[in-house]
Image (cartoon, rainbow, N blue to C red; front, side):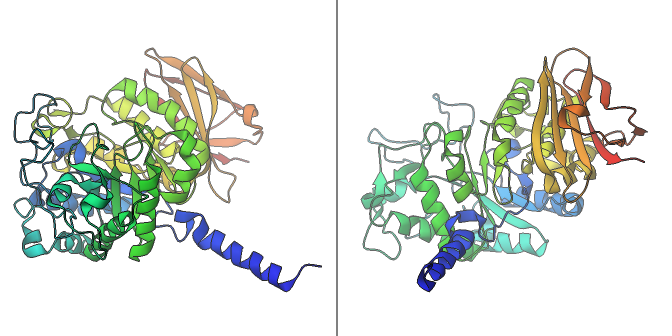
Length: 465
């Protein structure tokens, strides 16, 4: 006989599992793939408040009605003039701090009394007087948008050398920091030892401050590559739960290790499956493989992230990647990228300088039918691969409608071919080309289309009598 106490215990476990035990599944702040804009691809680490507000205005005026609602301030917003010295060991304009021979910073960043990064009032005037990013976040929210920011894993090395206290504890930065654990491409931080008393309290204090500012999205960097920092992932997740505000946790940098897929699903909302993604065909070609590999892990609340979309004008003043330019992606390749991101339900984060975005690129980024696939389709998967031909499929929920995207990943024109018999579909279908708007009735089960190099075609299939 099953005892009442055992039933009660089982119910308690189910409630814990559903509402708390699976981490981000509890009332996820990202039930759909996040959409918006991030400052990195265009401004690197040097954007100021006026430029950020101008970009947010464009998102509000032109993109919000299509679902793009996040505006994300990328890294080093706590330095007055990052990357202003000639760093021979790095790229042009790289923001590494000058250090003395002992590793002590020779440049100061903005911290509060508890070692938490604060915005530079030189670049963000509304932050003056210790206001932090709350005035900027309040302005963003008044626009109907959501505010995001970037952080690096760990605690500032400046806090370590100043030996600042961890808020609410008897510990200091030196008690929790690991000076030997540094990011290999950014020297601002020391790692945090998750086994030390005060470590979780430090992250709690960080996200407590973000919640007070009104932050909706945190891009946490140096989390997954070349080493997966599971302690920091868990501490950040716990800090978000503790702060009382729904905050999307986005993990960088990639490639994310697939061996930690379940850990990522339980603790984060999105994670970078690729390295830094730029406007080169080989990188896009590689993302075909990465997104296929991660497709089993697409689900509400946790999204494999193919990285920002580098369309339009990027790398202003030659930073962060190559000369200032209009994206090298051709129009054909832009259609392919947008189609792939949407079929794989990747978050859609634009990386451009928005004021100069041309109408054609704008139309590509705001294709309603593709955005519908990204936001609401299910069963997203690769169903066919052969000699450079790749076919993705997805379903419309509670409907017989299907989506089929056929890609030519070769350097030559190709007559793409897919037989619906492969996936046991035998109905008569109307084909709606989601890029050209052309409609036709499929005769038989075979979809055929001549597609140019690096191109694609994507169809919505609805049953036809």
